[in-house]
Image (cartoon, rainbow, N blue to C red; front, side, top):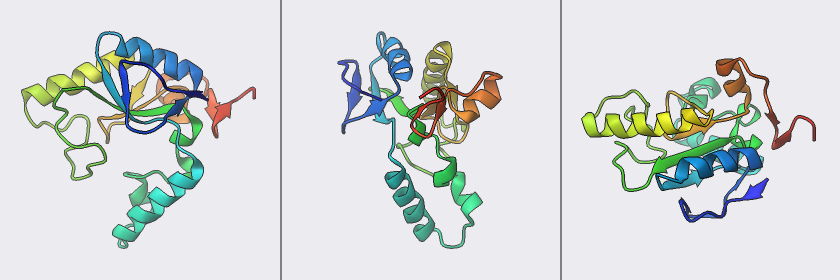
Length: 164
């Protein structure tokens, strides 16, 4: 993992990414400053997030919770190949980690939000990322989900590269 340190990538806490993911993100940020909310997430943090969401929604099964906060054994942020980002100073239509339905990438709020979400998706797609349909902010590269959608071989496993 490499520490994120780029003037065009705004972070609020120290963030780490796989080196290739970081290089791709820097290319996206060359012409559009971005906020990186989260990249690599330690498994302990993933477990805590999952358990907290489950506590707040005791009527939901693990699989239902997984639609919002990944089951730790299936989480992709722990690989360093997932990023949660936004375009700086653009209306994305909902807050980061808002789960009221408006966070879905295709959810229509207005033309400006639609254009901003499409721009973000286009910039990330141009670098080989895929978007998770239920979170406009969530993109992946090299993960198992990415591999299934693109037909490529998975690169990142449990915080490391396959060959590490």
